[in-house]
Figure 1 (cartoon, rainbow, N blue to C red):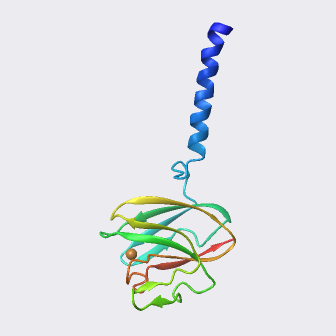
Figure 2 (figure 1 turned 135 degrees about the vertical axis):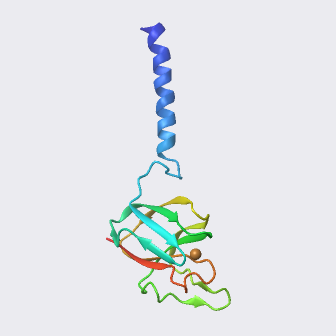
Figure 3 (figure 1 turned 180 degrees about the vertical axis):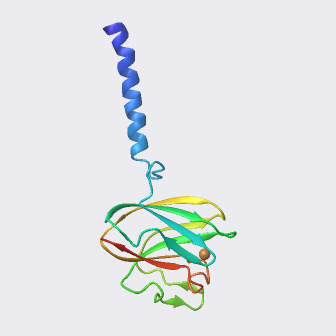
Length: 141
Ligand SMILES: [Cu+2]
């Protein structure tokens, strides 16, 4: 027992440490998306209009030939009613709960957030893109 059991026990502890390390990683690469968000010129589309509150994994796919962003804003305003800063040509980011910046053309990224119930707007806030139509509502229940 002592000659064979100890190496096995050490190995088991190492595996447990590695496994727990993966589980708490902030990138959460193993999470299956709760919803997909598709970015194009100049549109934001989702495959769900509502998602359950809590752990939400956004699977973001940029289909365009230019970089875009995904910004998640909690607000009671309609998706097309966010105030725009005239100087920067960007939507005001009041209520922002998370973002992915500089999502390269043709690439996919993940954004993992803990969301409380309410209404949200998903936008791309590269200058001018919100006004061109890069916005969509999301309800968290
Ligand atoms: Cu954009």
